[in-house]
Length: 30
Figure 1 (cartoon, one colour):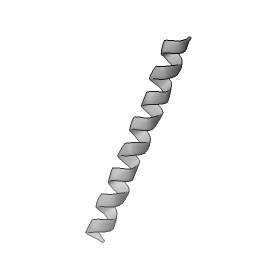
Figure 2 (cartoon, helix red, strand yellow; figure 1 turned 90 degrees about the horizontal axis):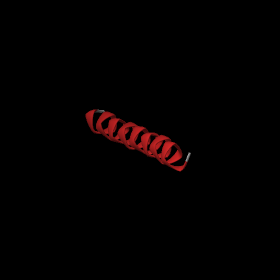
Figure 3 (cartoon, one colour; figure 1 turned 180 degrees about the horizontal axis):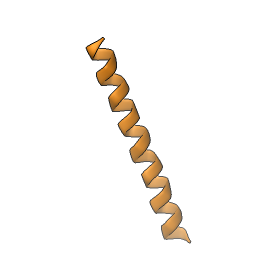
Figure 4 (tube, helix red, strand yellow; figure 1 turned 180 degrees about the vertical axis):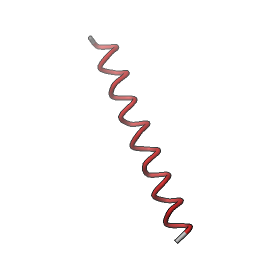
């Protein structure tokens, strides 16, 4: 379970970083 939680946490972190990248990219383009 701990391994699964760690993987889920890492996946959530990647998603958050991806969303931030999109927001920064959109702000830069506009």
